Image 1 (spheres, rainbow, N blue to C red):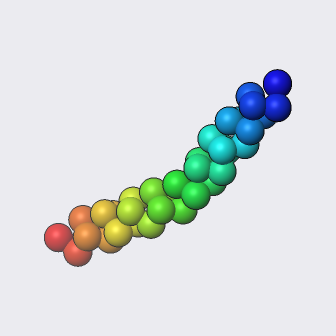
Image 2 (cartoon, rainbow, N blue to C red):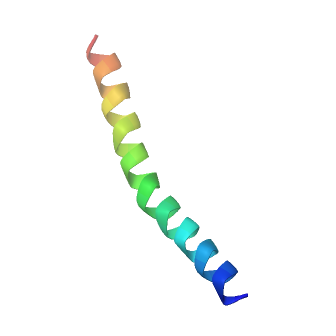
Length: 36
């Protein structure tokens, strides 16, 4: 049971870390497309 909670916590953590990087990537892509 503790193991499952730990896995869920890790997944949530990775998701929280990945969202800002994905947003930055999207922002840079849209910024580049606007320049073109």
